[in-house]
Structure formats: structure tokens, C-alpha cells
Image (tube, rainbow, N blue to C red; front, side, top):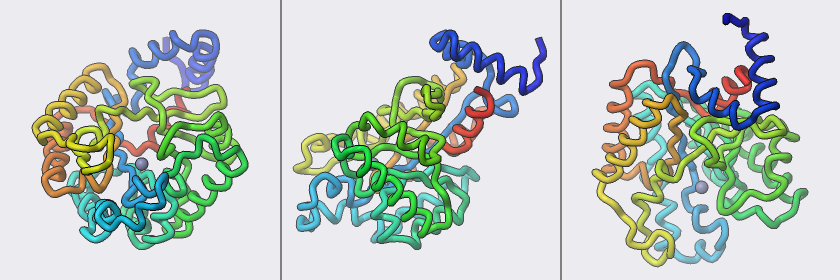
Length: 297
Ligand SMILES: [Zn+2]
């Protein structure tokens, strides 16, 4: 059966609405990536810096040692270091940015945009918005978007919730205000659509460098947690092999203060070299994946 793009879109929309679970299996089995690609690779970085702890605990501002672990991003010029590696591999990424980081470091945010990457929202202060109420959550989201736009000239259309759970309003707020994708959920190995049309670009804990290498003494979830880079290599390269085999959406969830460490940059370089040995891999930003998914579903 040979369908034109409009006929195909009508068919998949009908199947999706009638049989949502069957639809997901169908899309996983079918080659759905552009230009015959077998799988997608979506590199994402959460630019949290000092707000990773300070967002839910303002007292961190008075704790020089703890504060400096986020400040490290700026003093050590980690963003240019990461951008240089991405340029060397010729790949574009998505950076989820805390609003206050755009306010305080507009030059860095502007550089990310000027080098061709996708910028997206990641909380105003990396705070938990679960209980703040719909109006306040909307205000903070728009404030974050505007801070990123003011710094870079880039208009974000993607989001990853920071610092806690989503609220009951999050996905409605995103769609009502022009966002096309969210990357907070882990509900599939492929992108998927919510009932309100929002595309979910899934993210995965096994691809989160915090879960492997973040070791912050005195911070309960991240105390004495550091693993060998060889363990990271095994987890991330093995994960890619699986996503490639099954034709899925391989999304990383890196953080500049972790992946930007010198040794971890070597690991990222090694990982990208590994991925590039495979044919038919589509390196794409989260925005490109969301736009593609909207076009085929
Ligand atoms: Zn974060």
C-alpha cells in the first residue's frame, strides 16, 4: 500500500484515536524516522548550575561550598567546552535552561543559541511547581521563556519540568501557551502524543549523568554515588545498542556540571564516536523530533 503524506497522516490519526496501545506498537515497528534513519539520537543537557539545589532551598546561597558546585559551570566555562565537543562531532542538542540562569548569564545562553542548538524551559528557579497553582505556574513558565528569549533571541517551544513532579495543569499550560513538546515523562521508548496534542519526547533515568556520577557530600540522594566512567560507558553504549536495534528514540539527560567534568567529556566523546560508527542514525534536537512526530502522527 502506497499512501501520500496526507493519506498516511489520516490513517495513523485514526488508528491512534481508536487503538492507542496498538498505535504505539505499530509506530515502534514501522520505520518512522526521516530519510530512512533507523533510530534517533537526542542529546539534551539540563542547565541547572547552582539552582539544582538552590531552587528548593534558598539557604544554599549562604553555603559557599555547596553553592560553588553549581557555580563551577560558569567559572570553568563548561558550556563552551560542551559546545566545542558538539561542534567537533557536528551535532546539535537541546539545552533545558533554568530561567534565572538566562537572567544571570545571558551571554552564555546567547552562545548556545548562536551555535545552532535548541533552547527549552526548565523552571524559573528549578523549583517544585507541583503545588503553586495554575496561575502562578503559568506566570513562572512564561517568565522563564521570556528570559531565554531576551538573552538569546530564541523562542523556546519545549519544556522539561525541574525540581519535582508535574502539576495537574502543566501539560495544559504548555499547549495553551504555544509549547509543542515536553520532555519530563518516561512513558515510552518513542515520542508520543497526549490527548491535548502535546508531544512527549521521553527522557530516561539510565541516561541521566546525575544518577551515575553526581557525588555531593551531605546531599542525601547524591552522597557517595560516584561510579567509574567505565560503568557509564557500559550503561550508555549498551543502551544505545538497544535503542538502535529496536529503532527507538535515544535521549540523554546530561547536566553540564557533571558531564562537563574533564574525564566525563572524554566519556561523552567516546560515546559519540561509538554512535557514529552506526549507519542511519538521526541526530536531532528535541524540537526537531517533536516537529517530526507532529508531522507523522
Ligand atoms: Zn534540572
